[in-house]
Length: 375
Ligand code: ATP
Ligand code: MG
Image (cartoon, rainbow, N blue to C red; front, top):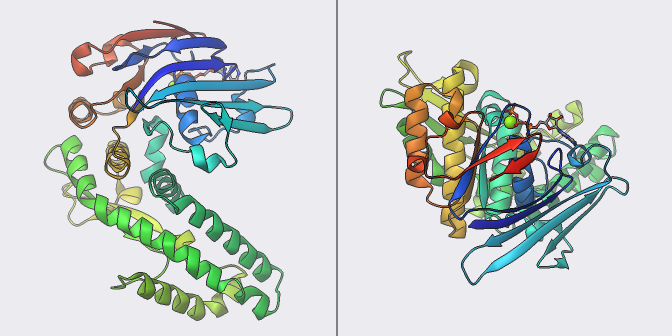
């Protein structure tokens, strides 16, 4: 995937700029608070149509302006070039996405246009944070890479919220349980896809973690479903297990006035091994800052592999100044790994030019000051 051109209008502090992006990518150098992350935020906006930093769309509009616009020309091959454009209006809170000039009925249809993966300092929360962070990670990765996942997830969320409202209102049991089959139908899809992804990726995660950490440490990834699934393999068996779990938690659901079991209670467990402290330890509770960062990096590298494996494209890699925080050995191994794994376009940011040691320093250096980018 190559981003060939980027047009920005009033996104954060970036003003009005038309940029031609070199095929190999670029390194954007600038002091703190000049707009490096804003630039990556604008690029990644074309992938998910929201801020990777969790900011509301309103925050992304330049101060004192009414709307922002980001337009990218994306080439999959020489023959397949498309223009993805998004505009957001502050007043009407209206977001309009077009691909090659035609407006799309559903945002979901344009998701993942860039096939980009973004490494950011905030990724550490994937490991240090609660299960909700990891569920969000799974949902983004699977929505972008598995046909039907986003639709199933949206249906599941809708049914769950209806059921929870009925429980909260102390509605008669029939009016609660009318939602059970919907939970099982859509929830089973979500459970199966999350489990399949985790099983497919656990080997790669371990290998990538070890490659960055050096040979004395390891880590593993395991899917911990919010429905007891021991030994259930087929779709039918998983659905039956889910149905049964809903059945047995009825009393608890009524007491807590919410739905206790289901994929909304899933976790993706990251466990550390061989750190000289005996048995496996939960990374969230026992990891060091560097171990969290290494595991988060491995998760993003696995995400890049998912894009390659499931969509057959080499992802556009965006790196927001993350290697600076690793110790020298780890950051060097992480960069080496990235160079080996990711052969496509790379856009990375750093405060100092000396922090950029990538592809033998051939990546073009661009500079940014007060939002203004110079090649
Ligand atoms: P660091 O090296 O510290 O990470 P950075 O170069 O990544 O810095 P950004 O986060 O990209 O910095 O940009 C921060 C700047 O963008 C701040 O100075 C902030 O005032 C400005 N900014 C953020 N949102 C808007 C907006 N909606 N309109 C105008 N300026 C904004
Ligand atoms: Mg930044």
